Length: 429
Image: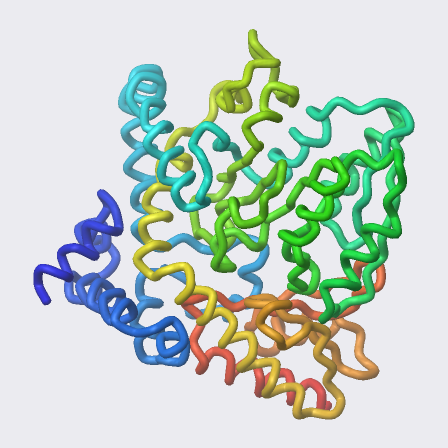
């Protein structure tokens, strides 16, 4: 047991057990290591329902006990080992910035690139480290050569930053957006594929695909859409802000041309960290937003010419990967799916409450949405926070009008019981 516990402590990176001691006792940090060991003895399905183990594992986080945070879909908290790594790298940088940042920490990008590439199942020569999904997809939006009249297919349920980027290119250059308006939830892949095909013409050059829709948690058949695009010589761009390190898959499984994600969501990496993937033959054809001396180079590193930035969050991504791997991607997905099912099934017993997400695991995971008959969703979210200290978010976007609820692995079923009671009380009043 001692040997295996030491393995998990090392697996969490340089911060390890010692970094937990300023906030927690050594006994608690050892308990977290033992918990991770116990989780790995269980199958993902068996681990998903072991509330005691997950309650112990929640000690790895520093979330406030004063607020029940059910809006992890926006930004997720980092485990303490990741926070400590950021602090350590940041303080090191300040000892001699130009030396430690540019000559020491900057050299850590290549080992980090290899770890991310391994997590994504792609070549390290196809992956660049950046700050978020918006930056990655903006690089694709502005970096892919297009001419007036070329068309992009995307949905009205895509994220606003991506919609606005394409609208700006449409206004400036005369490319054309062909819109799809999805009626969610969808439990048929063929319906989504048909919507993309119906919006496609001989002038269509790009399909913009959101893997997991931020507003509701709907999972779209990204791999099937990318395959259909490839058949027709259409470029596929995947917005994976919410799916990466949330669903159990590899980037390579999608067979997409372009892919971007934010690591500060489900990977629980430092705020303002992300990655982009570009299929190797397309790298030299894609222009970087921040120009360097070889903008048409086939080297993926040309997209990392961002100027001076903090190296501390970037380098601490490594500790987030170690923590994620210690849990296991499949175990994480199964737990998140279980938590979503738990609260959705409980509140759906109330006739006044409507669930706006599929409960089939292939179409949703951690994110879920609901509404109460006769109530404004903004009022529901406000009451949850003001009366019960429960943080959610109300969604009013296109044809979506619901409260979004997003637990994470540190969320317990006791937390969700508190939420369920609050929702039923609000519905009754």
